[in-house]
Image 1 (cartoon, helix red, strand yellow):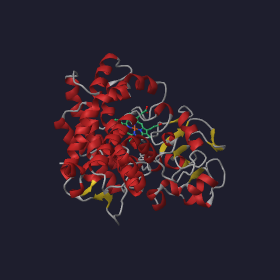
Image 2: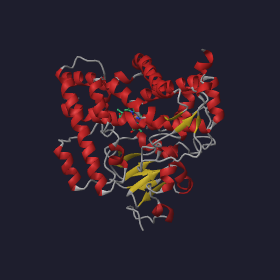
Image 3: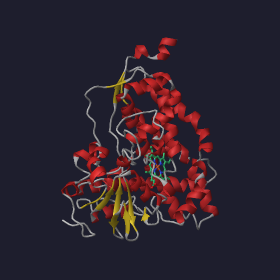
Image 4: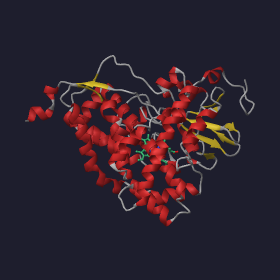
Length: 427
Ligand code: HEM
């Protein structure tokens, strides 16, 4: 077989399929051979060019003109006409929203809508996020056993996102139901039947989001980022048009929810599997922020992102034709020995952990990264103080939603001896 540029495809590249077990279980490991032998390769099964080394991934992220993000949320498995019909029935009209927009529109909007995401403007949220975290822990702290994903990690990022947006509580319940359909819809390989169910869920998600947005627009005096955006729309309808608000209402929840839920789950699994590191942060919680960066490096929740070449170009010396689609595998770049010394070692004292690409890089780098970091920091901080003696339940099996990009197990069981809870010992 030949690639679109007429080069022979190696047997390894011909075999590569991100839906096979090796990539699904450990994408960085699945790309180890390529990182060393064929760092940029054409995958005929995917019809994408796969980029695996740190410097190449960085170069692609950095140039968002040659490598447009327009396909970032394109359905990897196209929808059958019946699914499209279902979506039309719901009035589904998702447009490009920030993450997949080209310049100059992208930067103009990003600047107008950035304020609420800045660290100095996030401080005011810390107290209620901590209260929320403590409240969730109270529900299971005396039980001695919990699935942290189901009981907490899947819930908190959605609650935080909704409150950050300013969505009223009674509406929040409705929205929670649908947001997960998106991962499979965008990055999965759903069967034709699954496509129909997904279309239903996505359609309902869209419709619910629009109803809530209509209510918020009717009285845009409230507090929260969605209200900020509505007011920005009223002042600059040319830069923030109504169709943009409509799409953003849904897109931002997708951006905020599973990414953060999975990142938190992966971080707990990694830290509890490296007991010395866990013990170190229990002893000294000031280490938590650097531990989080190392967890995001070795076990990030966004493992691969997409770009499309807008002209004939080169990546890592390899010819990429105009229109070539790129799968840039952050999980692989994060384990590149050319950038991270002993990359497979988990080391919370590493000096450059924060140089990982889990939040992307450059003009589109994750706007919500400091919200995600805050949530993870507060959750870890409460656990190391209130449940330092938790341990992973042995021999549990981990399942992943089959997809190329969002990665984290669907459950994480931990156990502990409630009699040992520090709060009981002190009282
Ligand atoms: C963009 C990852 C949490 C909002 C992105 C991108 C990645 C990413 C990889 C694309 C970056 C690029 O193209 O260079 C993550 C991860 C998260 C997380 C791993 C959690 C650990 C959040 C949260 C929010 C959010 C909590 C909002 C509350 C956004 C937005 C963009 C974005 C608005 C588009 C930025 C732009 O294109 O200018 N994120 N994200 N993310 N994320 Fe996140």
